[in-house]
Length: 358
Image 1 (cartoon, rainbow, N blue to C red):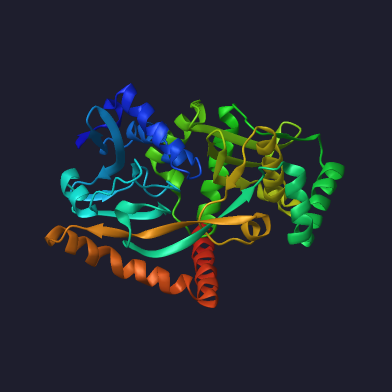
Image 2: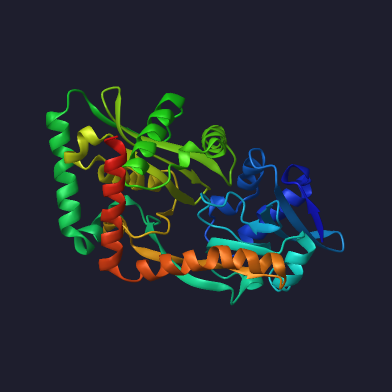
């Protein structure tokens, strides 16, 4: 095994990484591609990749970030919706041996891809990641929604028609918008939404801002940024930024203009995204981990991601466990009790409202 900075990977290693992903049988999630790791590394200098070789062939890759106290996290931790090792079938290095070789005392994860042999048994919890299958085309998907979520589909399409009648301008949709001004608008909406709901504003972190802008400009087969926008005339009213491979669109940052909330522009946007993705040859939209009514209405199935950590016994790991595990268990306790989770969301919203009134 050798440890390198992502920018030091050779073309041969990058191509081997791509081939291992293509042969894995897992969905072609763009977060798992070398291009995502390399783009994150440009804004997260502690990014590293462990590379396994057998003879003269690279056979495995483990991207991670190394903290100053030896804590390890996935590449882009906090915004990465899928992570793990990329290994040749049959290669099963011991997790603690991997951590020791990487010089980290622990590796914490929150969206571990299903079927990761290195970290088997390390998950503390598993979660559904809803997906939309449009592999048979959008018409087949919409026909399924008419059976599975008839009220949702009927209401959303009616609001779309109403928007078309009442809007001051033509309603139009752009699947792959290149205008950086539209991306800035989305980021402003999303920041306001985070504050409004009492959540930490991801876009207040400069590295996330820079990462998203760079990914918006990126055009590679395995990982390209896609900004989808619903317009009224020249005015954006809903937008989404995600990442795509040739067959998967990973949904990431959706938001909308609250002025148009009565038309549910975010839901209209997701239907048009599904339609355009199917036309572009994409077979799956991964809506990402997290409970939301709109995901339940849109989904056709689910993937599984996991949360947990692997530790190398020692003082550094123990300190990290004491610092993180009580909070993780508290969050898990709340998530598993819907009524309590609803009260927690209400409390967060109230705190956000009070902050906004200062």
